[in-house]
Length: 382
Ligand SMILES: C[S@@+](CC[C@H](N)C(=O)[O-])C[C@H]1O[C@@H](n2cnc3c(N)ncnc32)[C@H](O)[C@@H]1O
Image 1 (cartoon, rainbow, N blue to C red):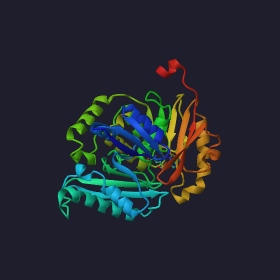
Image 2: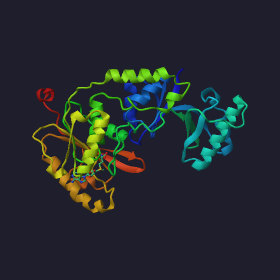
Image 3: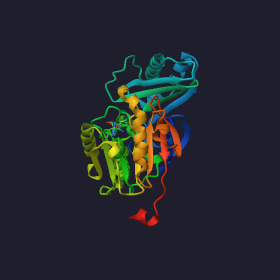
Image 4: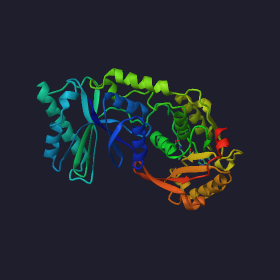
């Protein structure tokens, strides 16, 4: 049965997510700020969960309607076909409610009214007043944007950025979905050198290695939807089997991660091992100032400090100035860095060829893109 699913993503990454969905042969029906909708059968939902690198979740859309009063919200939610989806023992709860530019603006009230309406709908079928809630969890999400309500059941459970490999974190790790998206926005391919001189706990190098080896990010993590009667077990095993068949386990790549903090580099190594890609990433403790390479046409993709620790803020202009000098010595390289430091380009000393606004949660960041020349064909092949 074809249904509409909704994938939230970081603001600014909608086009990458849309491209990913198209790559899975899934039909995108709508793109909005921070959300991409697609149409598909239950297998499509499982595949989206297993394969998507840039979506935060995959949510089954139960319905959409307009509401400017709590009565309209209650009646609208109640009218949706909950009893067809939630078994009598379902542990259903509203896990998230938010509103943007709408008359109804209190998340806690939206959450409470939605929850009550679902109970009322369930009473319709089951003739119970209290539900045992002893079965599988069904997190319900409700968003109101410009008075238009979207109600959905989350099929992912833990957010999809949690791939399962990041056991240890740096002080300011980049989200896995954002790291993957940035890599996918660059022309880097697995036969080119990739260096992250500020690698922290290794997220960018690890995501690049997963992309290069075609390892689906959700290949070995669980999803809430695996317990839903309307998403049968077989679709999840089929999606995982498909993912396994596509892995290129022995693809060798030149991926390097450096950080000034030796402890965090040790954590990056452990995370890479947990992701199964430690053999193809070289991690080492090193100050960015020592970065050099005899190779040409490499890529730097990185997330430099942006003042996440207060004492760092005053050091940022000098640090970005050093980056400008050091990166500039690498012949014919391309560099991409994502940061919320507002004077990044000025301090770096060169205007980016392109920049792109991306919201990392509430933080406005920019991806600065500096393009080097393409390698001559012969060199590219070698
Ligand atoms: C924003 S964090 C990067 C986080 C990383 N993307 C992750 O997912 O964990 C910036 C990193 O730069 C490192 N750093 C600060 N100054 C440095 C320098 N001069 N050379 C190399 N690394 C440095 C910090 O230790 C920190 O881990």
